[in-house]
Length: 313
Length: 301
Image 1 (cartoon, each protein chain N blue to C red):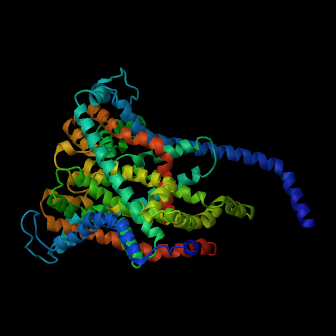
Image 2: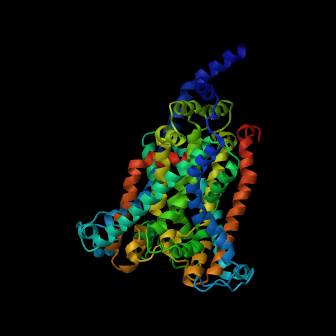
Image 3: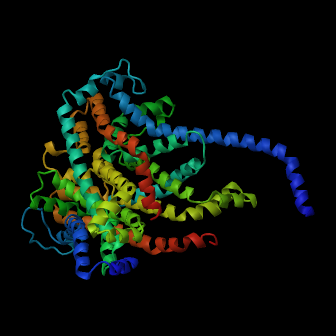
């Protein structure tokens, strides 16, 4: 009895070494096995396949080295796809996130109906991206709701061939993506704003700062960590854009709305070029990796000290 | 002292006029706020409401006056066709497929992630952080990266004609986020509780099952809800990994349906609305968990 209570007083002495490893294995291995088999191994396989010319059916024996990568980098189609991904990133950071932030600020007060607005704004996030695409395709048909809406407001001149004009299709898609995702960023930023004590901003106001000054120099720096998470998630999301575009345009017209994921899908499944498709997958992976490392290196580090130093900076 | 009194008198003198000005300003700002919020809410709701009401219209009504919101007359046949009529077999089969995949995938994700998060949160061993980092890596790259080899793999292991062929990879892709959210929750449960359970004769698994999981119920609800939303809306994995039409899930079904009946808009709208209803109802029930989970997961980084 006395031995038990003695060990009980100190945490984690109860495990004997072999039992501990058995327990760890039993708890960890199922998740690890599933994760390795269906996530990590396929990613490594993609790197392997990318070195072959392969249609996915024949034996994997036509080694071509880095030729698939050279083809990808020299391909206009793929370059358009990459630039489309980056166009969405740039538009998201310059338009969508500031818009989300503005709404978060508007909602960061107590007033009647606040919850209703919050619930409505977030609603599109829980809808399937593919189904959202189907609905908007219908509404964007020539002469349908959107066109009629513009005409009735006297803005008929602004009507475009929304999804059929290669010069305009990405703008249309960006607006729909924002329709679906701004509420998500708004909710994140709102949570961040609510974590900032109101007294800090009020103190600045009492000290004679204008509302905008107080926001710019007090609230915004304190919101930094949340804002950066929002930016990061937005960029990762824009890199893997697929569902909505596949449903609405399949990358068309004339490849004008291809993204990296669409190009990869077409290479692998439409054109039976599994090797080339895998090379595109690896390139997509590298973009995401660089982004993640940059985020780790420059952003997370700052956030550790950020809470304290933001006041001085 | 003198300065203090002088400033306080000046404020009290100007207070009456200042307050009125402030009140006017506040009312004005409040009106501006409502106008902006109502316009944005309109932009969000109009497509959804239009789709719901559009399902009650005939194609003639839809084409004749696209701006009319209220159907005249109300046509019920589009929806009844989806729920019990011509399209019911397709709709309910796709609904069942979505449901089966979601139940299996979410069950596996939450179950296996809980076990793993327990080890990561409460046991000290060599290599723990390496394994943990391995899982967090999964959050950083798009699932699209793995998709071509997954297609080959799922065919090789004979699951390409099976809903499990989607549910298993879906579960695997859900693991990183779930483990990352659960670990701090599991860690926050006091060590004393574990020691007490051990003294009472609980094995490690007994503690995990009978003490920790019940205490972590709110966290488990959060991760389950997030996993359900993710799995229910998944598109790329099912598109590539599912074999025949009889295995399709709702998002695939809606895409196919809209391609089949291009000129029958009312029918597409009714089918689409029925397909998004489960997500909307679920959101109504679990809004707090969805929003809470996402913000807890991301704001903490």
